[in-house]
Image 1: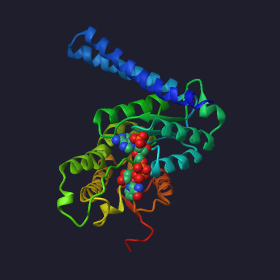
Image 2: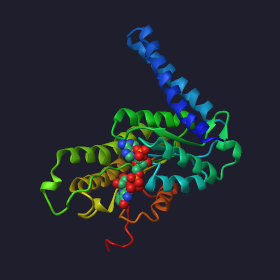
Image 3: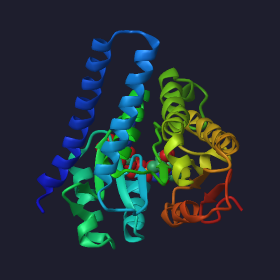
Image 4: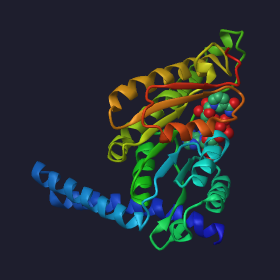
Length: 289
Ligand SMILES: NC(=O)c1ccc[n+]([C@@H]2O[C@H](COP(=O)([O-])OP(=O)(O)OC[C@H]3O[C@@H](n4cnc5c(N)ncnc54)[C@H](OP(=O)(O)O)[C@@H]3O)[C@@H](O)[C@H]2O)c1
């Protein structure tokens, strides 16, 4: 199957969802603004979405993982491992379409699913969806598209992060407001928006929400003060979300140091374990001991 075909599945997905949303909005306007009418429209929209999800899911009941920032680094390594272990996988990216396309091709090659589940007339087991984690609206769309395309969501690996290297010995170099806003937006808020958007779907599957924090969130270190502090906030967010999402969803984080070895294996362990929640696992090859 040509790469162009695979990517067109992703593009079509975006197109289809947008079209559906526009059609629903037009229908709603035609029906008028009365609350009963609005409720009926909402119910109809939910039924349509459920029907679309059923079709998109095809005959596959394999679990589904959504991996944000999934076309490189930790995200892509985890996508490869989950594809080998029987998961259908959606990777998210924001800019580099060609790189995302290549990772999707790799996942198809690595997959242990039967051929008819990897690609059939209802859709693909491996997709890339473009969405900017800096936008709450795009995060909502990312989760909606994933569920419409795949029919379910079992694991959300919320892996996106942002930093800019600064001199960690200088307060002046670490008081640039744009750095703090970007770090807080991506390292803290994006995980919260993802959890909010995915909660109903993870509730349904008794799924797992896992984030990538950092060793810099545990002890003063890393690329910038804003990064270190917001990664600490992310670890605390995860513990709070574990309480809020219990008992059906488990919420955990991994905290790599510079060495990224074994992060993917730990994510898989969190995905499968039914007995760990509110946990942050440092993966720093012993540097913190
Ligand atoms: N690397 C390390 O040493 C290290 C250490 C500790 C913790 N971490 C954490 O590990 C996580 C992953 O880091 P990494 O180094 O593996 O990443 P990376 O190699 O830099 O990968 C970047 C990924 O993020 C995507 N991306 C970038 N901006 C995005 C945005 N606004 N919206 C959606 N996707 C976006 C990229 O796709 P496009 O280019 O197409 O946008 C790509 O898929 C982060 O949370 C990071 O803080 C990393």
